[in-house]
Structure formats: C-alpha cells, structure tokens
Image 1 (cartoon, rainbow, N blue to C red):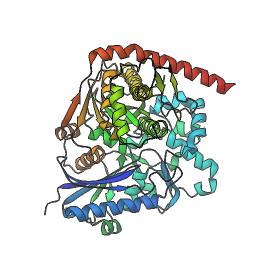
Image 2: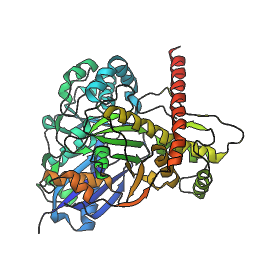
Image 3: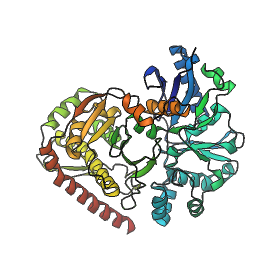
Image 4: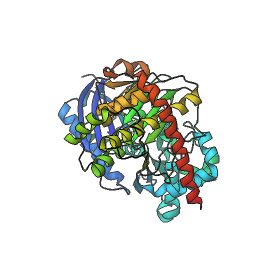
Length: 499
C-alpha cells in the first residue's frame, strides 16, 4: 500500500483539529476534539495533558479513517503565543503559559518603553513570549534554574513525538514572531542581552519545510501510526491558517474573524511598523514572503455585546433580528462611534485604552449600538490596511479572504467590504489551519513542489461580497473621524495615567 497521505494536527486554543489529506490538499478524513483547558483557566496549563489530547485525537482520526498505513508524513501546528520550559530530559519545568495569562504585561511595558524602537526595528514584532520568559525568570527563579530550552506548544509536542534531545530543540521561523527576539532567521544576541533573556535557552530556528525527526515507538503505539514517519518542525497556527486561506501573493489579505480579529496582508517587503506598532511582521511558510498582521478582539467584543447588552446567547433569534434592523442604517450609524478596546489594545499592546461610545443621542437605539460595534472592527481593519500601504507602497488589497466563525455574519462582511473597498471572498472549505499545515508537511517530503500553486489550486470561493462604492466613499470621512478621535482619546488617557 502506498504512503501518499499527510496527517495534519492543529493544537488550537478552543479545539484540537485533525485531518488526513492527499498531496493535492483534498481532505479525506477530519476529527475535532475540545481543548481540555478551553474556557477553564487564564493561568498555566499542563503541556503533558495537551500532548495526551493530541495523541488521543490522532488515534481517533486513524481509527475512524482506516488510512493510517497510507500516512507518509505528520505535520503539527499550534498556538504561536505562549511558552513551555523543558529540562535536559524533556520533562516540563515551566507548564504551558498561554498568551491569555497576562503575567508578561509589566515586563512588556518596560521592554517597549526602554527598547521599543530597537525591538520593532529588528523583529517587526513585540516580545510577548520573550517577556513571559522574563516573568518566570524573575518570579520563579528556582524552577527556572532547571530549564534547558523554551519552546512553543507545537515545538514541545513535536519533540515528544520524535524523542528529541533538549539541546536539539527547534522552533520554525513562522513561530518566532511573538518572541520578539529575532528576525525570523536568527535570534538577536543584542536584544536578548538588553532585555535579560538568556540566549542559550532559545531553541534553534528551523525552516517550516524541515523535518524535526521521526515518529517514536511510544507515540506510534498510542496513535495507530507507523514508527519512523517524518514529523515536520511544528509551525504557528496563524501562519498555517493564512497560508491555508490562499494568501500567497503580494497584496493578498485575510480576515481571520474569530475570538481575536486578525487581519493579515502578504508582502515580500522586509517592513516593520515602527510608527504605530499596530502591525506585527510574521514569516510565511513560503520563502521570501511575510505577513503584516494586526490583531484585535472583534469576536470577543461581539460576544460581550450580545451577552451583556442584549442579554442573549450567540445564535439566538435576537441576533438575526438585530442584524436586519441595523442593516437599514446608513454608514456611520447616524453619528455613533464605538471604540472596541474593552481590554486595551493587543497591537499595539496597551492596557490603558478603554472602550466607549461617542456621539450617543436620544434617537439612538439598540440597532445603532450593534451596527457601531461591527463598524468599529472594520475601522480598525482600515487603519491596518492604510499602514500596510504606507509600508509597502501597495495601492490596494483588491480581495480579502475571510475565515473563522465570524465569516457567517452577513452584515459584518458587508460592512467590512464597504469600509475597505475590497471584495470579500468566502471559501467553501473551513479547514485553513490543517490544510496549510498539511501542504507544508507534503512539501517537506517532496510531495508538493510549489506551495503557492498547491494551495490556490485546491481552494474554491463559495461566495463573493463586493463593496458598494457609494458606501465606501461615505465611510472615508467617518473612518478619518474615528481615527482622529481615537488618537485624542488615547492622548487624554495617557496624560491622566502620567499624572
């Protein structure tokens, strides 16, 4: 029996997803299981429990599909934020510390105040994971003395699957961007020294298309796979998702409309947003390409509005009725602006900015409030796009591919396309992380010769949402006003904090 298939596993925040694919990207079997820590803790999580969940999900997939004997390679992706510390025997010393745990924030604030220009200039990013290392180093020095290497959750899982020795630990270049300690190809000794991060604790940086090792006997026995299968280096889930959405050419854009609202744009430029620090530079699995990514909390804000303002659960009739009523309103919600910073901003990282409505009047109703919330997400995207254009010289992003659960919100899609003036494309398939990881793994063993061609050839647009040019023009001064008031709002708050 030929070995001509890929097993792809995604260690996500809410779910773990597993798929078997052929080298052309066709999905042959798929299984989703819950993350054992989803929604239960904002603190640390057991990396061992997550690893066990990974093995169990693979076992379910191989048992249901009956395709284990045809698997030629295993690809893993996982959360890009968060760290795991292992000792010399690969035992966990620091549990998985996810980005939702805010222990890094005081260290990040200090790092950006003292060395922000250098960090952004050299890395194009912010050192969230780097500052998590500092948090453990300062707050639990006894445990830290046992650490041999600091890893991502995907890097930890890959190491256990193949039995890596700790001093040979790897991180692929797509996963370096939230460390903020290097440029994607090498760690910066200067930055590590200035921030106080021990350089020797960082793993070697590998290529996404590289093979970390070969599946060990224990992992094979627990998953139903054959021993000796190549396992790739373990890429970042967002990088895998953007690739799987077909964002592989200059000017391509993606909207990952989930709990976090991630807007990413593709470029070959080595650009860094040093002025606003709103766009983070992420390496693409495709050599020579990068993604400039802005991150907000659009999905979380939508959930808050429905739960706390509407007293309704997601998916109830009130949402459909509210969307119908809000759709009849003109651009700008009749003078109402919403600022969606309920927990500060993620890019740039700042807890001081807070959410509010501006322009609230007697004639405004629930439908105005709702539409203004959706418009605020689009206004932030418009800001990201304007920064992208100034950094890269791009004239426009003619198309945006939308993925994630938010893709089902018809009104939100229409507002976004009108604000941006870009066509929104909804894909038929919704397995972007696993598809991207599968094609990278296939390329690692020679099954895919050209990643951009491979991914675009297996995607089909289900529906297109085209902008109303009249509404796009109407939104332009509203977006300008939103950004101007946001700047005033920020300056006023910052002045109060300084006092």
